[in-house]
Image 1 (cartoon, helix red, strand yellow):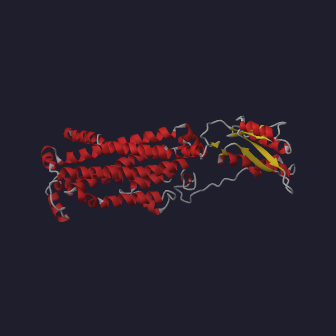
Image 2 (cartoon, one colour; image 1 turned 60 degrees about the vertical axis):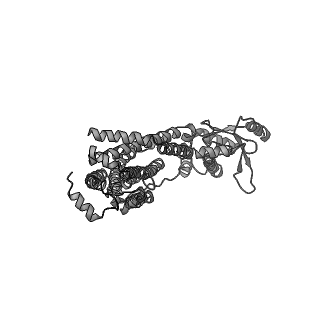
Image 3 (cartoon, rainbow, N blue to C red; image 1 turned 90 degrees about the horizontal axis):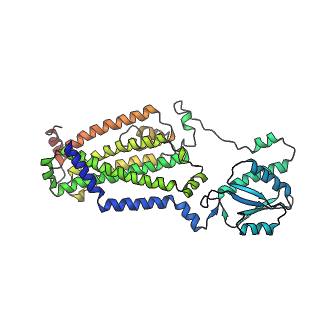
Length: 432
């Protein structure tokens, strides 16, 4: 056990100190930062937009030109005030003419002003918003909703009661119910059972699981192949048992992967908590507090188990290859398995109840990503999650046992890759 700990520590320190690890981590952290701040950069290059979140949290002030249409202006101001805390507010212009309101906007006292122009043959005037900068689509949509309500009040006048007007203007929300008894209430959150913020979290976790597993798995295979090709393995095998060597390397590189994920997680969290990014999330009705913690917790558990399942297979393959040039072709089957797992989850994220995803949730090679989609959508019962975990854990024990036997015989077999018959014969002679 002490020797395995020594190998684990040596592998971890050796990999963390390499230039490739440092450069990759820094470059990816920079790319993540740029990607998360793209909306903010766009607003900067476009000169910013009023109410877009980049200019602060203060409400957008819009002056009202009351001359000509005092009734509409008064009703609009009253309606807006009754809504409570808004991203915008109307300021009655009083006796000010259009030139005075324009001067207020140019002086920065207001962000723009709203003018009503009479249209021949129409009872409701045409509203025109003048502003120094572009107003965000969210603010425009809110103003249009307020104008729609005022328009109804002006057009119908006293024909309808206040309750009838409120009933007409209240939007109709469609609720979706699943026909499956066991998934009924869980699948009704949204079109695919996932809130927007959880959709993004699941999407990112699937990508993280795939890229991290492939990167660390190839590290393990290349490390073992390099030691074998340089004949260092012959010296190591006499001082440390093959089992300690294999799992020492696997755990050491696992810690490297966890460190890298921790760095990326900190970068994402730091960027998402920046004021302008919080505002962007708010504009899309997304709140960090809405993140389903079960997705994060189960995502971490399935990442760890999925890593060890693929890691022992990468270690076994790496032990059978004598030259690093042959490694790419040798690990191709494992890479294809990982790609299948990735594509099943990515292409099914909008339809978490399909049969393919349910079946994939119980296959150890695809379950880490498939079950994560169903957990994020809230359609995976607890018994299915636990069953998937048990199957995955048992698979790790079985493949770990096989990988240890292959590793023990493969690291000392040089030249061409051993055939299955030769490998099976050598494995039978070695007892774990």
